[in-house]
Image 1 (cartoon, rainbow, N blue to C red):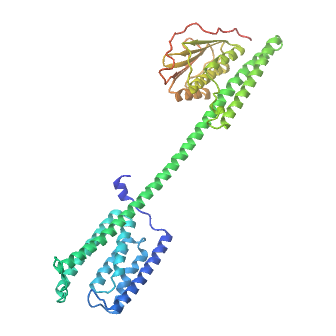
Image 2 (image 1 turned 60 degrees about the horizontal axis):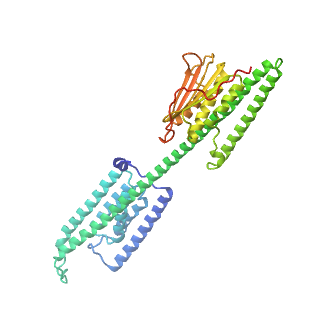
Image 3 (image 1 turned 30 degrees about the horizontal axis):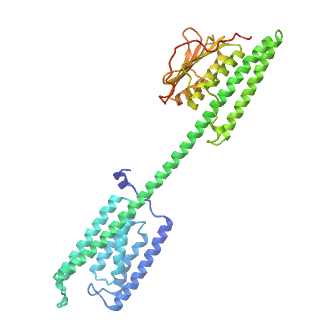
Length: 442
């Protein structure tokens, strides 16, 4: 909040409880002022000169103090009424001055602390203080000629007595008005800072709520992605195997049994993966279960084996010197490869699948190609492609997914390695594949 915005801030009005407190304070001050008036009349100490009549004394005492009942509700009106009544009472030589002076101090303070428009409150207070000092000057000018002879016979100081009395009166009034102004300004600043703290606390709570919502949404997306990766792959393999089993069931019982065994194994693996993922969701963030990865680069060979079991001629090639990858990168590379293999099984109608893992100087790359004949559009991605992009983007990597010029489909993902010490590997190009492909089983 800028200084201009701070000055434009409007302090909220008093609560009902605060208005009730002001009512009782104003009545109490008025009662005490009447008691003070009674005592002043009883002592005959009329310092301002011959007093007016008794009813007029009561009137001026009440006029100066009673407006305090609405001091926080109508601070400007209260200050103006108290100031005018105070000067008028002084001009009429009303004997009560102690509580009247306190009422003026309180009205000045309240205007600074509770004024709706701080600029107006500042000008009004300065104007009232200037008027009071001007009135003090007028009072001195009028009364100086009426000082009785011998009033300062006992004076022994170095300063002339009349000048000393005038300077003393001015100093006292300046201190009283200055403290009233200062305390009112301090109270207003404290209220404004409290308002700013409440707004900051509200903004912080809102930000925290939005953060929690984003975290929940992110967790939901992560769970959906994991479920898609785990279920889609194994169900796709089971679907391909079931189709192969149906086609060869009557003419090749051994091959059918092999397909059924593959379906059984895929089902068990899917259930195990789901149980593991549910365990991760239920576990605390620092437990061993929560830290366990659902897959890594070392398990890509299992994906190739399952593709072979589904009838594809699948090959796996690893190039460069393998190094230990960060767990998150290894998991992301595995999941991207898994999704690419799943798409080949589900959509490509392919006979050949080629999976390559390359350990380069500053990145690791997974490359999955097939010779599928099914036409797929890269500009209409499904959940699988969206999940792959999310995983790659989360690691500041690059993803290429689309048809190859010579036919088929390619998915290539590159993951940068943050630590330069990881794998000062050699990019050996497309060397010999480490695992040769098997022929189709169907």
